[in-house]
Length: 201
Ligand SMILES: Nc1nc2c(c(=O)[nH]1)N(C=O)[C@@H](CNc1ccc(C(=O)N[C@@H](CCC(=O)O)C(=O)O)cc1)CN2
Ligand SMILES: Nc1ncnc2c1ncn2[C@@H]1O[C@H](COP(=O)(O)OP(=O)(O)OP(=O)(O)O)[C@@H](O)[C@H]1O
Image 1 (cartoon, rainbow, N blue to C red):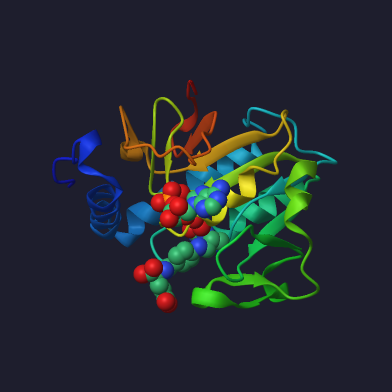
Image 2 (image 1 turned 45 degrees about the vertical axis):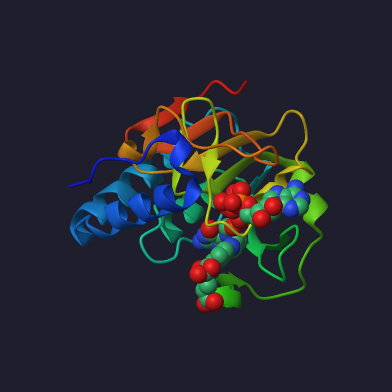
């Protein structure tokens, strides 16, 4: 059960605590069900854009983050070239191509990332779709990340046609989050109940 969410003018820190606390309270079985739903949505092709023959940037979930390797496999089965973030010092993220679980090793912060030479941050410009890790997202497309600014610095390189989609739990689509000028808004949320169109601007 969630505690009451903070207010938009409380700042990002209490919102991060709220989301992390909420995720921590979700039983493992429910988390697995939600991950299965997310992978099913991808496998069913119920995304806002076609991914066959296209590049999709995604991420390997860590801890209580929504998603799974099965979701990444579903993207590959749909014919996508899947790129995963390679985390360096704070700045734009580099990328590595996902070739299956055996091609991953632990990187910075213990995050699993592809072995092999990293690709430039600008590769995100090739992407039809970016699945962005998030703690919460609001109806206007403001995304709450972990607070290191990696994705805000990365998504500036996305093309105008790239679909930006924050992956969150149903309860993490909220009316209004605190926003900073540097925040890059996303047009969609991917939740276990399906894609949710947000209205940036
Ligand atoms: N799965 C996943 N991969 C991702 C992200 C993410 O949110 N989730 N990122 C999204 O940006 C980037 C990495 N950003 C991160 C930002 C902060 C911390 C973090 O845990 N910081 C701790 C210190 C942990 C430590 O020192 O070991 C902290 O700030 O307290 C981790 C990753 C790229 N890859
Ligand atoms: N485009 C940018 N250029 C320089 N600094 C930036 C940029 N975007 C964000 N930052 C810096 O990164 C820090 C974290 O920003 P913020 O709290 O918005 O991160 P976040 O969106 O939660 O994290 P992330 O993007 O890694 O998921 C802030 O100190 C901010 O000034």
